[in-house]
Image 1 (tube, rainbow, N blue to C red):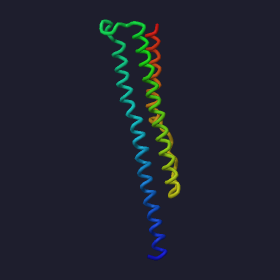
Image 2 (tube, one colour):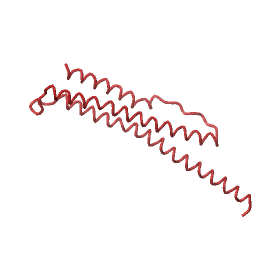
Image 3 (cartoon, helix red, strand yellow):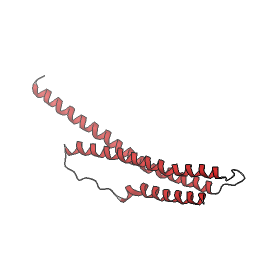
Image 4 (cartoon, rainbow, N blue to C red):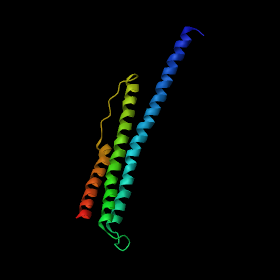
Length: 142
């Protein structure tokens, strides 16, 4: 094995490493973006739960001040948990994109992707849900 063979092996290993890195970071970006949209299902389920809470029969659960505060606390946790999840997924997606850009820029030139409106839909729906939760909390406490 001469020096040229070693250089070729090194180049091949670097290329294979880049390909594996692209696959890994691409999968991470894809799963993060997919997971972000899966929160919409969670939001729908939570909206249905809010409807059930709003139509409770007072014979089943007496609506005392204590019960109202428990419901308020639980309702308050819904938007906090969704915003936390979306923030975390955004960070993972951003890191994956940065790593992919580093790898790709070293091999080919490309245009950076722009953020589309459709990427904002989970945030818009979560914002609407947050407002609705606060309105329901206001109704409960009045």
